[in-house]
Image (tube, rainbow, N blue to C red; front, side):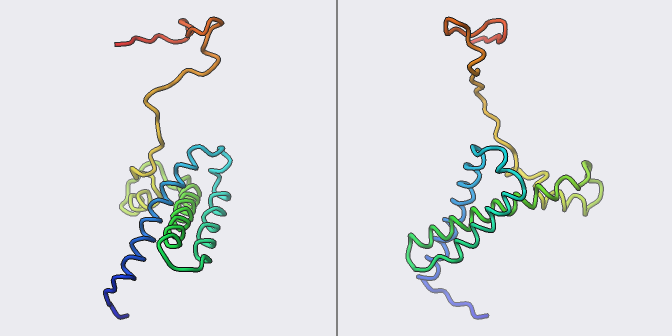
Length: 146
């Protein structure tokens, strides 16, 4: 292996890297609003393999192609890792006593801050909470506004 710094290849690699980061976060955003069936390991695995396959099959050079390749690679990466984590995590013990169990739990997202699910801070009441006169039903909610 020969190491040679080339401005063009470094820019291409950086562009693919930025696209991969954007694809990973874009995939997480889309999975957050997708129906719950899309979070099944089989579907996430297919999405992951599809992202890798389409990203690897793209031909061409330039900024746009590299961003799209990276984006698709990020989608593939996020979904493939999500599928593997969903399959492996249930088999891991709840308490991680040994060093190898701690490593496995860390590898498969059991104590990773990236796997923390989004919890909204503002809970907007649904349609069943409103009374006939478009007022919040007082018996269901006790709000105190400061």
